[in-house]
Amino acid sequence: MTFRPLTSLPRLFLLACLLAASLVPVSSAQAPSLAGEWRGTYNINIGGDREIIFTLNEVDGVLSGTFDNPTAGIMAVSIETISVNGNDIRLLLPRIQGEYYGTIRDELGADGKPVRIDGDWSQAGEYIPITLRRTVAP
Image 1 (tube, rainbow, N blue to C red):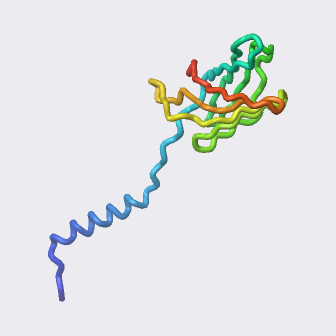
Image 2: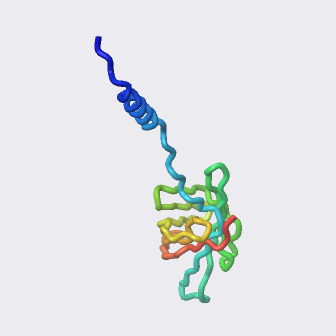
Image 3: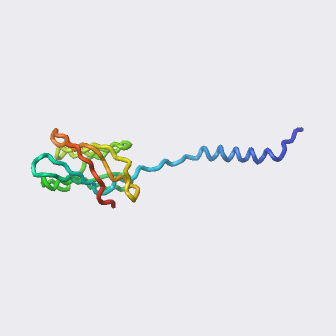
């Protein structure tokens, strides 16, 4: 009959623990929230700078929001679709034939949330590059 030395048992126990720990799922970090007020300006050479505002809300990880263009008298238009894929974002407003699509930059505020999106605003076939900056966080 062969006996194993007692010194090998702790190694086997340690190996079993390491194996078990490797099977435990590790949760991935969530993307920072985009909730807040996002403002951008554009100039189409008619009456100076104009401002657009997207107000995004997040409840249980689902984004919703509204759009304002005060100069054009457009206020509180619901954003019908908000898609985020990695750093890409797309906001659709079919009611006014509007769309904003852009790239969420790695630039973060003191709260650890993104503060800049570079993209294009499209309305009725016209495309205007607009950088959005988060001005108010919830």
